[in-house]
Structure formats: C-alpha cells, structure tokens
Length: 105
DNA sequence: GTTGTGACTACCA
DNA sequence: ATGGTAGCCACAA
Image (cartoon, rainbow, N blue to C red; front, side, top):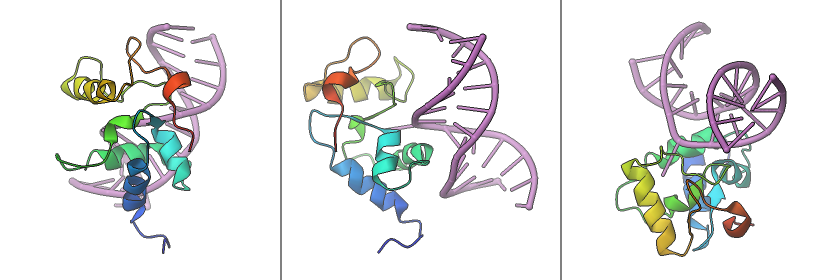
C-alpha cells in the first residue's frame, strides 16, 4: 500500500487510534510516526475533519508543549481537558506534564 | 501558476 | 516564562 496517495489521512487516524489510554502524543510526534516528520500541521488539519461521534482518541493529541491546540477556556479546550482527566491525565495549569504522560511508541 | 490559511514547531530576544 | 519570527506543507479559492 502507501504510494503517494492522499490516504495519508487514514494513516494519521490509524496512528492516533493506537495512542494508549492515559497517555498523550504531540502533532509532530504523530507526523513522525506516519513517516512524514514535516506534516505536524496537516495532522491538525486532519483532526478537524473528524466526525462528532468518532471513536478516535483525538483528545490525546496535544501540542509539543503539552497544551491543547485550542485557546484556554474555549469549549473545545474544556472538552478535551475533561476527556483527558476522565482517564487520569491531570492538567497542571494550562497544560499536561509531558514528563509523566507522554506516549513512547 | 499564485495566495492565504491553519487543532504545528523550533529558535531567539 | 513570554512574544515574535521563520519554516513547514496540504488544501481551497
């Protein structure tokens, strides 16, 4: 498989799906795991297209500094924080302590 | 072909 | 820590 088609999107979704419960990964990390280290932005662009009831753990994907990609206080930010804390990923201020929760694939 | 945009990063003052 | 800048690249207009 994998020639050069735009199924990169599906590859990204597939990788995101493997992030274990209670762990988090960065956009850049996902991009690297997909074999496209320079596509961190595209990972984000792709997440945006996820359907409402998706099974994908999109909330486990954070920025490289451990903060959600949304402005603090926004609805999306709050939802993400809630989903993470539900699985014992506790925030410290505006972000998650990567030392403790970062996923080592 | 060009331009603008964005759920990104790394680097530097 | 905080803010600005530059590099990045798929995608839509």
